[in-house]
Image (cartoon, rainbow, N blue to C red; front, side, top):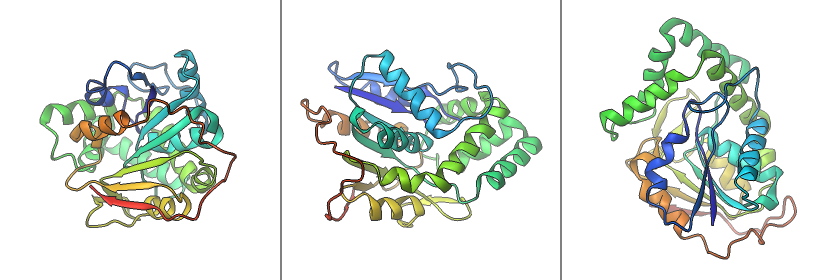
Length: 272
């Protein structure tokens, strides 16, 4: 069984170690390292989430993964959708962890972030960003490592990925969903409102991300995760590992059909 993990904005492959340490030896793991992230090649110039998807696919090719499950967190969930939409025969199933949509257009979103970086510096912005992600359940060392990873990203890298993320949300989110043909599971712990304020998904179960997935991915299994912040894989690594371990050993992606095939069955909305 092959599984590829994709980290979020300003994060890194290190976010998955708590999960991968729980997996049995028969699971072959690929940890995507997006350009510009800690331990990866530098990012030069602009990038799109389609570029990111192609980069992840290249990394899977290097591991000889012909077919694989994809696990993506936050921005990584977007990249996972983009990859599965464009290369459906390669992806057997998706696990999307606490995705969201940037409420502003790309230019406004990037301009706002640039102002914050100029005012507070990378470390100050990193501390503010991580604290906004409901990380009170994490221990101080985990929070420190998260902040440090954000601060390690060069300013141009933070801005380039934020623009790419906002642009994908605005123009490519729905088209990607409409081309998904493999099973999709969503683990959602937080909800991002129109002011980019993050709150518990249990108290606020409606967001553009969830509402559009419910409406357009007929067989999506949506699990709301109570009392957990944005980094589900750090707080609940066993939950993610269990999903992987339940993938059928014979799963080779044969269920994937042509683009846009859907059934009329409603989404399953489970409360974990």
